[in-house]
Image (cartoon, rainbow over all chains, first blue to last red; front, side):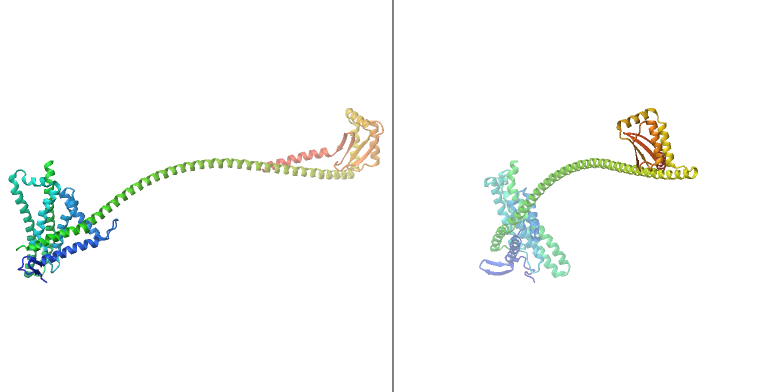
Length: 232
Length: 257
């Protein structure tokens, strides 16, 4: 079953329901599916957590995932993972699950939509100054845009915008192109080659989730730690 | 490739909701569980460390107790060995004393038996010798042994030294009770006359003579006057025989042992 025709480049184009500007398309539906799996799965596992040494397999799995993400954030943020874990962790888990579910026939990754990746990139774009201001105060944060001299202000702003754009396009490009490649290969060589490509797709999906979230963390860390480094 | 602005904002809201929900249902709970477990493990390690220290303390205490027990045991064993040695010595001493007592008793019994045997032997030998000698004398010389005994006795009175004679004479005068003549055989009247005459001749006066038969005298005759005695019997010969016999018995026993 094909949800999206090969000519349709984004799941945004698969519209299920529309009323005026309110549109329910494949992107939203599959986003909700991913959200439901994540939230319901978490609730199922964490409603009965064992504080002892003996715990369930799923609890172990979630502990490994969460402590892995926390470890990565710790490395970048130099030991302040607690503040950033919900934001960065959710970015990673959402993108990773959205990409990994591409193995399920009939599913279209919401990250293959430019709208989704742009929304996520905007979230990062807004989160970076918020974390920076929370950490350093608004004055200190804004001063960063004028360092070393005020001439650098436009470059700083352009850097912020361009990296947001880069985040958006990198994720969208990778996932969308992979989906298109699979679709084209299925029509050309419909047997083993697409399977190999699917495996490669899982790897790419995980790598992209890692890249997106680690870059977000790097941006946030750079916004929160510059002041401290200057002080040193 | 365009951006649907409704979906764009919806995705932002979706993402924020997801952050909230995951924070509530995943991160906080999982991190709390992990912290609890870490605390549990730390407390268990601390507990284990405490128990280890306590165990080491107990082990040291036990070792000390064992050492004390071993020392006490050694002391007790030494005491017991000493006590056993002492007891052994006592028992040996007692056994030795018992053996000595038994040996003494045995020796006494042996001596008694030997004495009784020799006494019996002397009695039998005396009787046997007496009857044999009497027969020999009768057959060979038609002589009576009792008469011969009396004659030997008379000769003894005649040959008595003066000192002894004076003592017997004095005791006869002092006592006034007369003379008692004891013999193992009845003295015939002719012999009685001879005895009276002899006494009269050598002691003076007319002594009153009383004759008695005594079984303990073996083939002999005795004169008793106020605690003084003049006698002849084959007892002397028999005593020599007994001495010889006892000597021979002892010699034989010594050779056998």
